[in-house]
Length: 473
Image 1 (tube, rainbow, N blue to C red):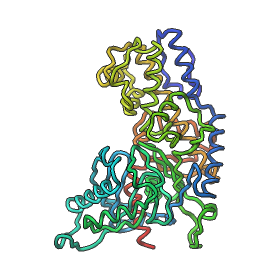
Image 2 (image 1 turned 30 degrees about the vertical axis):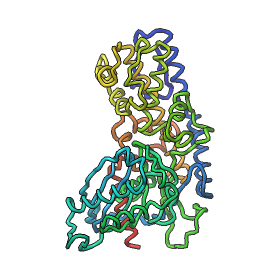
Image 3 (image 1 turned 90 degrees about the horizontal axis):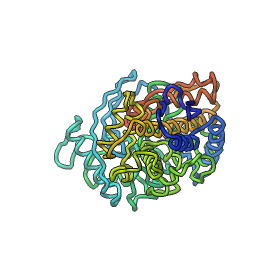
Image 4 (image 1 turned 45 degrees about the horizontal axis):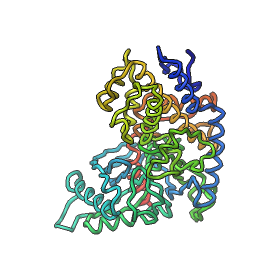
């Protein structure tokens, strides 16, 4: 039987032995919807480049292209100790980062889970929680000295990684455009997040000055630049997805920047919102169902097709569709599988990596974790194929946004370095290989000039670097 997906890595497609004609026909039909040819990728890339140009010229565009006001590039010789605060989709992380020169870094860190109540409640509760966590960190993890209650020996500079769309007007000022990743605090949008954090620090008597606000992709780019001066792009592929890159300042037409000594500025693309108008992205009924039932319908369409928060739910929708047609699990589902977001993206990762002869790891997920009454090998092969469809499309769409930046910056022929952070890129089977394969299809031999590397802890180290660069100015 020939591979169903023309674009998939051939040695990763497993046969579905013994499946009925109806099952094979249904899988084939779904697979065609998820296939991304080079021609379709090129169409998406062209539209992406156009949207980048619009965002650089005018505020309020679908792809915001947010200036970070970070203009310095790390040399690797910086020395000093700074705090970093990283608020992402699931956890709050506080770090003390010591730069020791010659690229040497020491890190102390602490994590706290952000509860659903904090994500949805009043903003002052969220920022008070953050301030309390920073205070606890200073007491337990640093050499910071308390002279007496409320009086401290020094104030520490802090870089704030805030992984949500922000309209930034200075390196330490930024207005929240819209919450993503499950956050909905209703009174925070259209307010300065640095101001809200600094006010919480004052309320809690925490001796910290927030000197820099960065997106996690900006932090990733800075962190990777500290190790590799040829770095052009920083990307996150994790719970959410986004990218940032070094742009020539004259091309950022929507701002007036008077410092002629600076030639480049990091731009936070906020590409999760790309094509919210649904003009070029190949949306399926499974994507539309997810979008319709999400807490932000018609928003972050690109992110919903790529990021770890959503891939499991897309797959769950496929499985329910096949169950409803009596083509999977003999038509039986379970309360667990019927629950929104119960099919976690971590399950996809395990299933795609399952090379056991009878797909035992897949069976355990389906029968023990999701309580499907029983599964056959054919059922498990169909589930694995569905995971491959969703995972492959996510990687190829990811390659399109990366390719668009390279084309926009005219770096295809000369090449550059790309730093990527996030659990999806680091742990999902074949994700990075699929991106590289798509770039080879798009750029041929020039793809070998694009150096893609894992950039661990970009949001922490990068935020501290931004705080340092701001302090130097």
